[in-house]
Length: 138
Image 1 (spheres, rainbow, N blue to C red):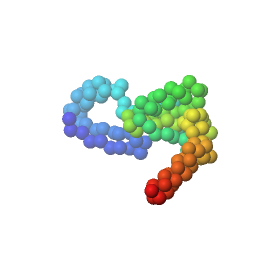
Image 2 (tube, helix red, strand yellow):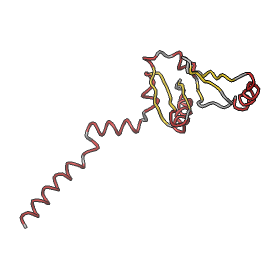
Image 3 (tube, rainbow, N blue to C red):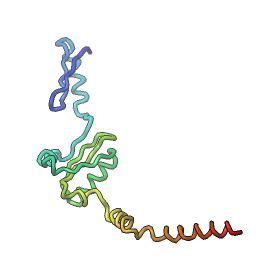
């Protein structure tokens, strides 16, 4: 079917066909009407949240669905877009730590930053020069 398409300001697409092809277009349109390229969850929350208050984490669709279910279980208000590899979950900035960072991950980061996780490394560094010194003297 010959057609023309225009992308409008609000990211919608207007498709135009001739009157002769209108019945065929309507048939195709009704067959695919339920299908969407992306699925939105709680888009009203996203729209109501000011841009400077949003924290969005991009991820693939499987991770986004899992995270959305997890946030729903925790009672964290959120919005999500499921669209394959370009999926995303959005929360208010005040909820971002609770939503996206696990307690275990935060503890590992604290240990890494404070140096507790690196206690074994200084011992290994001390042993290495001793071995080299001993080998050089033999």
